[in-house]
Image (tube, rainbow, N blue to C red; front, top):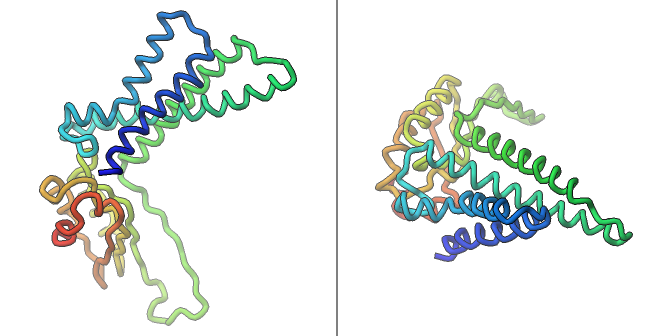
Length: 235
């Protein structure tokens, strides 16, 4: 499928950008140069490792902490490639006035950019794996019928049940939703990343969602990637 091929090519392009924009300008000794390239190549190999070791590049059958760790390394490398590309473009400006950026500054900046990339990736992984927090939003309508005054809708979206987000996480989400005693639960797509045979048991806690007027939902683009026809039957 085209989308699978795309996600295999993106890391290769990002690795090239990270090396050209983030490693070569540092003029490192050969040993450190190759070590840096090797570390980046390993970080960008997430999908390849998933395919070889986990059985599938996108739904690997691996322990969740392993998936999180590889995802963290991949995200950090991707952020570094982006930051390094921007820094390289900025460095072109002084060349116009014949005042090139010093090597010491480039190396110090590279360390700072790498630290920022690692921190940002860490925050992203944490946000992705924790139980979603509850955010309350009051919506006001001048012409709201009286019977809907105080009506409570719990909105869930992008649950992405996967080998890294399994049944215990969904039990925690369901418990949190039911404790709010909603009038309606609305789920807007992207329930899953994986085939029904692999993920429907992990998604099964959603059966326990309770709301006075029921639970409604719609599929998203990720259901289309994983046998939409079968998932509709499961849902």
